[in-house]
Length: 617
Image 1 (tube, rainbow, N blue to C red):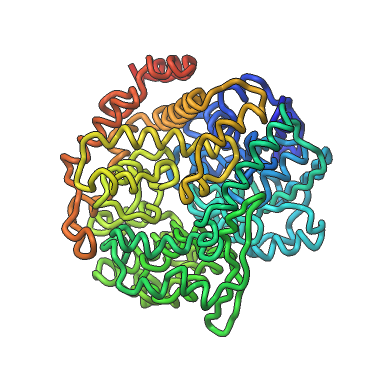
Image 2: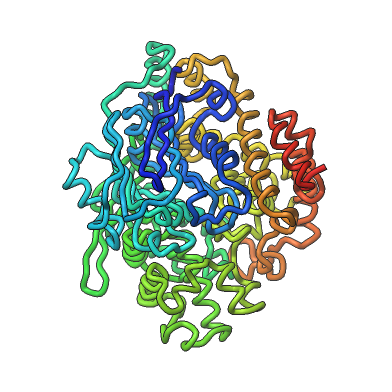
């Protein structure tokens, strides 16, 4: 099977057994790889009502057909499970070198279930697979754990780890790799930690068969040449994603003080230029990536100096402006704290920013927050709260449930400013002045995340006050962007440098030998999208339109200042957006897939199951 290693590695931690299964033609044809494989196994193998922290939940780690090959940035691994943050389908992806190494070991995906009796790690060395004791690693930070395993096993092993936050079950605990890459969203680290799995270490020496090696060389060489000759490449190599911060501020989209504002007056201290001048030590790239957007930085605080990869834009937005930190070095140090503890920087920035606003508004007092002076701009408060969250100590036990969980305890006024959808905290684009971007967040299948449909540029192009007609563009992006997660390649070249999609359409047949057109692949993405939506419908009897509703702040409060001052989206606007979106999707008015839509997409068995449950008609 061209483009694939050819096997699924099964791991049952409860029994201690591992075994390979052959990759099937049906799985490849219908779900491509990466995120598609994850959606399939989570839907098929996680029983309705399963505890996300329980042994019945599966953790799926999957690459795609482009991963590990000679082409730009075939470096993406998708990690999927039932999310402890939302109780629904969840996934996150990670760059670095893990995807390539998995393929070289002969594995396209790992499906992990059960729970080990003692702290363990999964060891994969080509065909040798072992579940090894990790008691000496339990309690250690993510970065420290990777350092120790590299020393024990060798630098050629690619390693994914979890930190203390995953061990205690923080709902936004992440999985770390390559000393600074994270699968941050949806609590995939918490699922891994709940299985007593501290790390996964992989080494492979095998090749990956491709259908047309000469064709691959020809198309990939042309792709690399076009990227390397693009004048914009130097800017991305110099500044990385940190340069997005000032752009986002200039268009009124930078989350500021718990999304109260979208324009930060101190943004110059967080810019990519100041980061390059003051704290960058060296550049760093994922597998086969010419952009090298990773930046290793040095930061000092409380008498300690650390090295950290980052901060990239999302971290700067949610920890920096959203918590009103004033310097990029402060953000970098906070980034390090989160990485070592194994906390998603996006959710952590949201949770701490939420706590800061609640404190400053008097919704909570010092007694509620363990005596911490939780004011905007305080790195001390950020770090103190992060450590408490990871340990689930004091107020950290509440904040470890995310903003949705904390708001249930702190009351209605806090609920109004708890910025999430479906329980997942909002990522780095405040969207009161961007209706299609707002809709993208509302309808994202995993919760409030931007990566499925980054459509804010569409709002700018066609008019930021226009509501009607924008749903179709969101649906289009929600098929194109997740396709990158399925084939196992980074989307940055396309999004940030305008790299033509035609290259990927040309690469697919020479790699796989399949005659699927780009449009055929987009239909497969639509199938995957409807499958993850169906997971939510199956999981919750009352799931529907209410779950696609944004935080109250966004339709009750106009933007107070900045480039889009006065902007807000009304409840009527939100209903127009959802009505158009559901119609474009082939869903009913409550946002549930219609039987005919599921059957058209080859999901007849799903339609039958949901009809029997009385969830769809």
